Length: 286
Ligand code: HEM
Image (cartoon, rainbow, N blue to C red; front, side, top):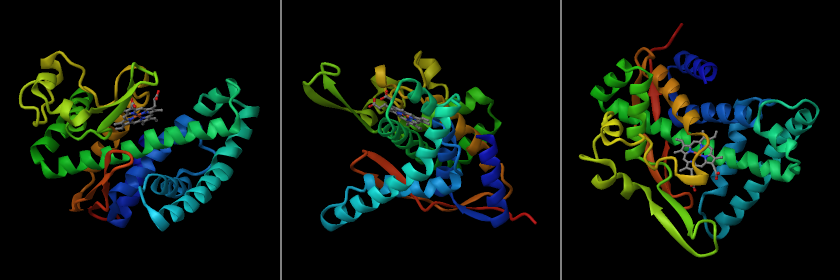
């Protein structure tokens, strides 16, 4: 996290500007790839391949656009498998490491099942955290008091602030469940925004970022942001730490400014927001 953050921010300082949603994606790709074991190819080169797979998989396009997206997804999915996943599987077969691919091999997974596992982590870990980083930075740029509080705060304070922003802007806005759990019965949708806006669930002034809320209410600060039960997000601490490390360093870059606020789109397939084309500028080095 730290190494990738340093590399990305050094590049930002040399160029004097960057697209925040692109660099946050590079960070989340590098971090999740490390957990999965996809470290044999460079994260910079893998990021655009994955971006195309994800964009076409969840575009929600219809008609000819849908056919185009299917073809593109198949092509970039094939590239991801051949260039990134397959060579790593071969290496881990000979020398297992502490990563998800090695764990899958130990359990006897096929190459196809490993690819599915890689895609799960890509979708669950990289896309979500990318949006979160941009959302947090946007809140900080817009609210100087919050930004000062965050930069002054110790790790616990910073985490509490991040959790409050995520409570107000949940990336997984709707979770689906079968009732009874895991059965073939009725499908119910849990509206996480509604839960997080409800005084009965989160205490007074639900629309305020209040870093003391969770402690005061005797709750865990994540509320429902990372789900609950057997499918609770296994990457929640990773997501919070990488966001904290990156945003803290970003806000300390000399001259850092949000030159263009992101456009906010809604993705009906994933039921989540997407923040695009945010531009940050800063003093140039050298
Ligand atoms: C801010 C960032 C993140 C948010 C908001 C988030 C949110 C969630 C939520 C709500 C679920 C539960 C889905 C459900 O119950 O149907 C989930 C599952 C999952 N998350 Fe995350 N996540 C984030 C980051 C990450 C990261 C960084 C990783 C891994 C590196 C990750 C890996 C996963 C996986 C593998 C699952 C599926 C778990 C299962 O089905 O057993 N997530 N995430």
